[in-house]
Image (cartoon, one colour):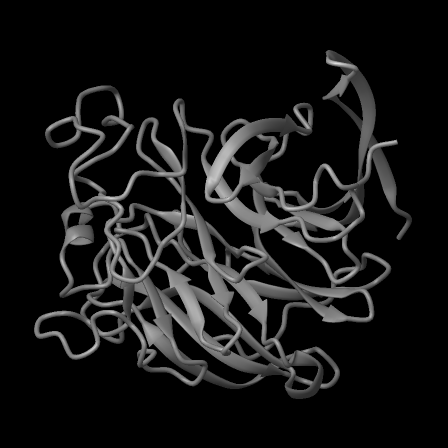
Length: 373
């Protein structure tokens, strides 16, 4: 299938001799694949091929030529509806030898109704047509009847353990402040299941041992920085979308503090944005841009100015945000691809150094971002 290029313009400010001028550069995206229904996550499996998830409950291989394979066999039961379904997917750091993948999804209760976010491991077959040896290695507790706020981004760390982001399930937002449940949390588990022994609440009475950080609303972007630390992007309500750097036992405040407000207006709780003991976001968007997908630029493909940047997709305003990072601070934002007109659901840097975007539409696309000329 031929690649289609789409020219997009954006502005880059350059300081020359103490003066600032604005130069227009041609930024382009290539359509790698199309015809994806509500695509959610993308992972790289070598030879130019990728795994892509579709929220209705399908995982496909995208060939190096852009052709979509048939849905993989072997997926577990998935409750697709609302914001739920088959969501993120990542490959194991040793995928080249073990063909192991991890994916997360909305898991229906075995009986009695309700659902929650679950994460499973599996082995991709040699012919890339099915998932074998599927094992659920984490299941969010408790299950509730909700079609919203599943979170569900996966990040593997250097020791092979896995961070998984978990939403507050919307109706259970106050659970984000307590340790006896997984709602509104980031958890860390071993690759084979079970709490990581270094988690901050292991052995604490009344606390679930998988919890890494708390006080989150709905984290749908997560990435490791070049120095190996976890960064996340989080949906606020009406306003107050956030960039955070979750650390062990840190409380990010939801719903006690927030820069957002109730849908339709009105304060949440006491309407405060700060409180001692609760973390401030590193960056926040008001009005909400609905962030999903997060990636650091570590390749040389886009020039030295981009290296170390943090890229975040916008679902609501349909652009790509480039955040300039200095230490632990976000010092500037550049809005890219303003005419894309597609909901950016996932952002990943591929092994070839290019940035790939997934768009969440009924006829969604996998795009490759090309350097400006």
